[in-house]
Length: 433
Image (cartoon, rainbow, N blue to C red; front, side):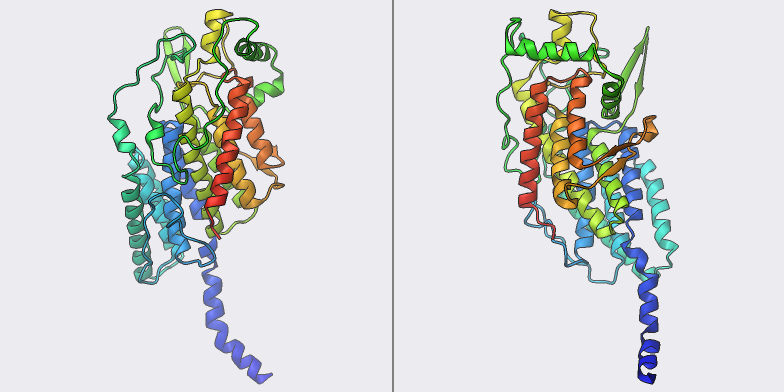
């Protein structure tokens, strides 16, 4: 008995230290950093594809820091296209602090409103200072986070994003049946060269080309006309539930409302931001550790990033006319969709692609039967929605585009096929554990 007491007494300092450091696995700082970044993305009005790029690089930076301290998880080195090998830190660090700092520093390099994000950086780092980490460990952690962020940004600089900023303005195809800008402000084409961006996991932007869209036709007996008619009839007989679904998944980063001679814009979360939020909701409800949360966020962000690449590749290749343009020109000039038509071609549906891709990887990561309360849209005046699974959520997101009057059924269904193919490809290529 005396020997047992002596052993316990000798171990007390180590047990006490382990207890006081239990906060290191707490994912709260990463969730806070994620929300801070999303707020800035909304503020700066980044388009959905560009927002997905920001989410990908920031989360991969955080993940790579943590994976160096956790041998149960695997680095993205050799798993993502051209991803560099990140060196292990030579000094004692708080991996959690270094990861969050890598996330935020990477984010600062990718947004416009750096000052807004800096305010969040200061507040989040204070959380760690309150844990009374030694000055030496704190400084080493912050420095390592900066070094990883720098390595990730050097990698990001070669993805051809910068080159696409200087390409010529998009020339609209002035042909019958091709996409043209839509009311109320006839915004310019969003990211017509996004298929030039280096994918993270895909071999190429055209790897998962969908089947050909229905050929354009004004013939009332044609398949194309019938799919337009479905949009027209559906939107004229929407139930309260249909309207609620369309509104919940609107996710238009810059919706413009016109009243007389006045235009005013409403900023909202992007489709990708909504799915990053869902990943966070499930991480919190399952009490995921910092490491597991970083893995979930990164996997979701990878699916979003490559999802926008394959979708945008098809959009500007097929260049299909939007329902609003077709209906106003050939059927009913007074008709308006419930949701504002986004400024890019119709086929395939972006929300259908990325939602299904995200749901597929999250199903793989958390399981197919996990339910959650999605509170993403509460700050935009909408209620919490419960979903029994990620698949249920992505299916609702997809069909919301028909209710909103901005997509034909073929773009939705074939978009979901694209997203599922991508999600399966990612889970087959990326091994986090």
